[in-house]
Image (cartoon, rainbow, N blue to C red; front, side, top):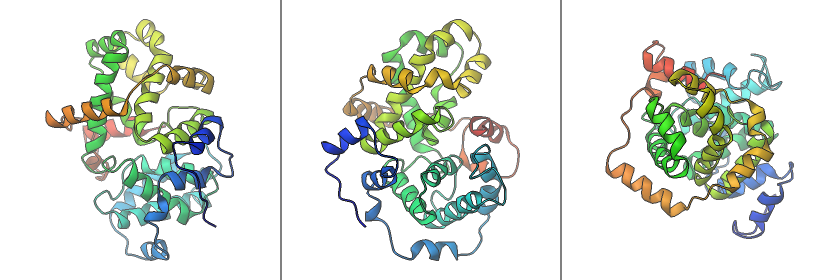
Amino acid sequence: TPVHFPTPNNQARKMVIYGIPTTLRPRVWQFFAEEAKIRQSGFYEDLLNRERIPIFDVIERDIPRCYPDHQLFCDNQSEGQRQLFDILKAYAHYNPEVGYCQGMGRLVGVFLMQHMSAEDSFWLLAATIRQYLPQYYVPTLTQVRIDSAVFEKLLQEHNRKLANHFAVNDITPLMYVTSWFMTLFTMTLPWASVLRVWDWFYLKGTKILFRIGLAILDCISDHLLTECPTNSEILQYLLHIPKDKLAPEHLFAAANRVRIKTHHIDRLSRQVTLHGVPARGELSTSESRSPQKSSKRRVFQRVFSP
């Protein structure tokens, strides 16, 4: 049965602020992502019946790493892993430009944890990428690189002392926001924070990625400045932040102090694009599609390893 929600700027916003009921959350996400606009009856089954393609081998290798400690996915023979594989292989056929990229499995896993069917999860994945993250999972990581450059500028404006500490130690946002943004913080935040961030993400869009990213750094800024004097120590901490540092009461208090206007993000994005996005550097999904262990592949694995 279709659910008719009010426009995102009034009562729906209140629902996000005060908490979306667990049973309603999947349908709220579907509504905000405009999933109904792209859903086609019977098409998911058609995609599942298409031929096997080489990227399926990469998907099969990655699936056990998505949520190894969750009961739905911890067993190689589990229904959860089978559904993950089905959804990701269907998407590889649905959107050949993207195919498959590490990070997508983390999104699908959250949908399945919300008791969504495999077909509903597939269409929400498709709608999420189309509506919010259209160039995030392409082989060149185009939008990830643009957003990481924008994030660097926002950090300089928001916390210059920490930005300088990173610069002195050759830490760039691409090294850490790749895993933060591409998995929508599922590898970084405690579960109690993840769902609330996702609610805001579906309501407000990618602006929330920047706001939460800056809030995370605010929560750990003192530790990074006083306890992490080297490149390796900083990066290790950024990719493995203790969950208690990012509990909802800390994270959202910090997020409430972060003020970013969408038009400012858009302006910075245009500047970055005009001057050229950061060089492909270390991170590229084309290496993640290849079985060979290049240095780029190792960095990508480090970023996305639990």
